[in-house]
Image (cartoon, rainbow over all chains, first blue to last red; front, side):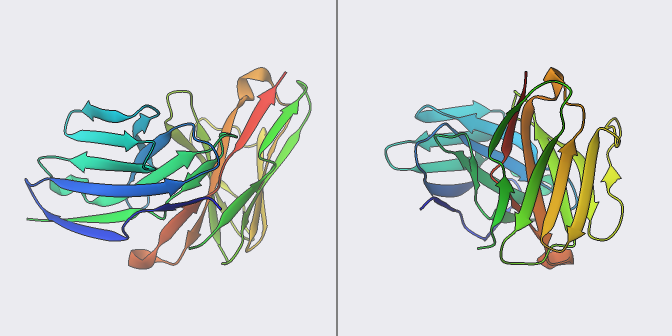
Length: 109
Length: 117
């Protein structure tokens, strides 16, 4: 079957670095998405990886290893506003999205 | 974990026809469901909030007469694209809300790819 796993909740300190991991199993693969979602708001697109490697966008970076079915989202210089849920979603061979349940990130001062 | 399904997964239709997309929460009841549209640059646009037993709440700029939403039961919401045009071709994603307040979680469906010819 197809599934995605990511931690349910993580806590980090303001100014620090946190890595949110995501492992997936899909029938075929057409890319992996990371979205940020604040409570009561629509998800905001963060990144899309389809090739192996690290992609950096400011304070956020996303890594993909297709052979390992693994991705992570790296957040640097954490700010209080980064407190949110982070959703990992993989796209299968039919371009269907398989979603993780989201990781709730709590930032403490 | 909770599962949300969508049907169909992909649909091709002729311009001017109507297409219905179903969103179901398979193992929980959802009084609130959401409909999104994913754009080519991967961003998700919230189209409307679907509330069981009442009218949907549409976001600014979304035509309610074109995108009909019906949330007839606690496990089913439907989005009907009426008089579809090629510019309506997109990837439509629904989500269902489980729980409330701090315990609230949104579960997303796999998406429906619509191509209007």
